[in-house]
Length: 206
Ligand code: MN3
Image 1 (cartoon, helix red, strand yellow):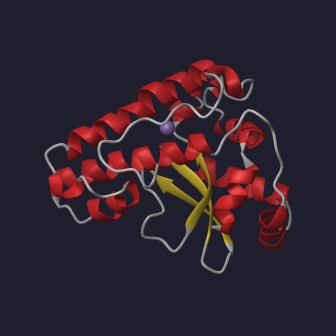
Image 2 (cartoon, rainbow, N blue to C red; image 1 turned 60 degrees about the vertical axis):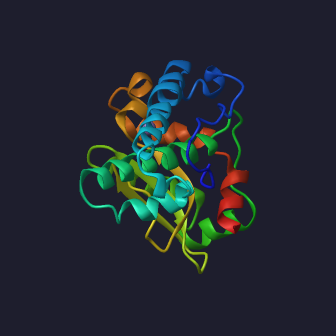
Image 3 (cartoon, helix red, strand yellow; image 1 turned 30 degrees about the vertical axis):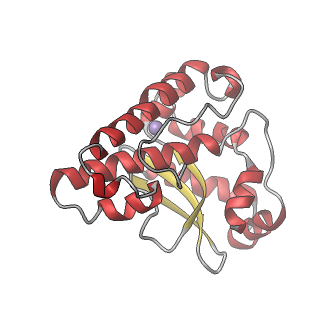
């Protein structure tokens, strides 16, 4: 989706059904998150771009950079909407109904950087709990292949940092409240069962 240009469309749900991520995420959570919130960001981005022909040829990734140059409320709205589309596309594409484990070069990088997969999970969950209000937790890689855990607020992406995303967890309350109420740590703990580690490895190596 990062190479898509205006008009943006909601990608097909990357699972067989809304219930495919149960028992870790309910069909109700996936339905509202995908069809209402994610779709809402796609719609608002198209609405914002309709009167801005100079921006309609830009890919989603290019928009993330260009939006910061637009002054005033239009620039802010464009940043929020483009970021919301980018982050949700990455989040939903990074999950799958079958539990897998990190492997290959990414696993070796995790072990080298954090000591173990378990230690990565602990540090990642802490970053999620420490995110005040709404936002995201990223596992990302720098040009040297070193891994970092970063947290961004609202719909801020990694655009403008030296890191490329490997994994992304949505820690806005709408991502987990129906299933876990206020227990964000338990949501993150269960979220690992949904991570598509082959995709994460591909992201790490690209
Ligand atoms: Mn969300």
